[in-house]
Structure formats: structure tokens, C-alpha cells
Image: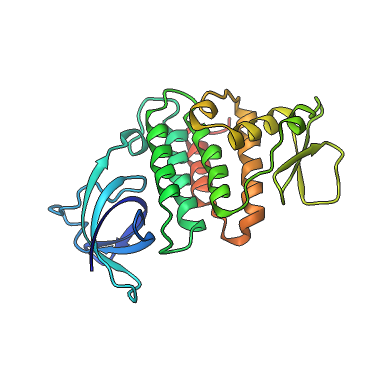
Amino acid sequence: MIVRTDAVVLRAFDYGETSRIVTLFTRQHGVLGTLAKGSRRPTSRFGATLQPTAYVQVVYYYKAERGLQTLREATHLQRFPRLATPDADPEALPRITAGLRIVELVRALLEERDANPPLFGLLVQTLAWLDAAPAHAANALPWFQLRLAAHLGFTPDVQREDVEAVGEDGGTLLLDTGTIAPAGFVGRASVRASRPALRAFAVFARTDLATAGRLRLDADQRTEIEALVDAYLRYHTEDVYPDRVRRVAGQMAEGLNPRR
């Protein structure tokens, strides 16, 4: 069966001398492994369409019993240039890292061949916002992570009165429910966090992307909120939770800003 549908490229790596294996999140078939024959040749018709975070229209031959589908065509539907090429923008690396981290999470946490059109639309919306955001672009990552959690069935149970009750000494995030509790709460898997981090968690969990995108976080607060969201998702997904992009980005950041 020949299928034409839109897709986001999640991962691509070389195969043989001229081809690539490309993992796609497709609207029609969900996460799908494909073989792009000849895509590394200089004259390849695929061009730059197989880069992670690319939003493309694809044509592939689909056989349910086959592990890898044959990718025939790919053309850009919407280009996200700021997610592909570093520039002089100080947010270039955080922006690109957030985009790669988002597609890494989708690839790792979704079941293969399980179509999810609402999540697909959310992914495209998030990548488009991330590419266009003038500032605070990295806010897209924790916001998307908590939306992905909701699609996977573990929406954080964040209540306004609990957030408002957090004092200056901080509070606790209960990892099983995503509930915010007082600082002294004990008895379940939990993470202590500062008041700003817990409030940011609530914003990312409860608001739309435009609102979450306006949240200002200093470097320490961003590190803390990202660790908090990671802990919440890791608790529910355990060993399948990926962190390769984060490790590589950390190494790159160290290279750009070596300690003296």
C-alpha cells in the first residue's frame, strides 16, 4: 500500500553507503521506521528533508508485516530554520536542543505504529512556536513534556490552592500524582523544590504555550524546573526515559563555555 501523509522526522542515521534509516512520527501510522534508499547521494531527491524536527509530507510503501517501510518521497510542509542551523542568537543552542529533546521523547515514549493525531498536531504546533519564539524558546520543552505526560495517561494533579500554599522554604512534588505538597510532606516518592520551580511546574502544567512561553526563568531556576519535570516523567516511564540529547547538549555547552 502506498501512503501519503504528513510527518515529523524524529531520528535519522546512515545505513550502508548511500542510504539512511529514518524514524518518523506520521499522522496516519504513528511512529514508524523507514528506509530512505540513496538519500545520501549528492543528487538525492530527499535533500535536507530528513533532518530531525523537519515537518514534511512523505510517501512510503507500507506493509504491516515489515519492520522497515520504504520511504519514497519527502518534501517540506513547513520549514523550521532556527531548529536546524545555529546562528548568532544566544538562544540558538537552547532552541535547537529543545527541539531535538522533544522529538527524542516522542520517539522513545510512544508505541510504534500507534496513530495519535492530537499529539501529532501538538508536536507540530510546539516545533513551530519554538522556531518562531523571540525569547524564552526553551520554555517549550517542559511545557511539551507535561502535555506528553497527559497523552500518556499521567496528567499532573496541580491545584491552585496547593501552589499558593507553598511558602518561601519551598515545597514537594509528589511524583506519582504530580501533586504539589508542603515542604515537610513524607511518605511517597517525591522531590523537594523551591517555590519558583514549583510555581513554574504549575504554569507549564496548566496554561497554554503562549502563556508558558512568557515565563521568565534565570539559569538556576531553569535547571531546577527541567530537573523537576524530568523526574516526574522518569518516575512514570522508568528505563525507557531517554537523556542522550541532554548529555550531548551539556558537553557542547561545556565546550563553548569552558571553566576557567
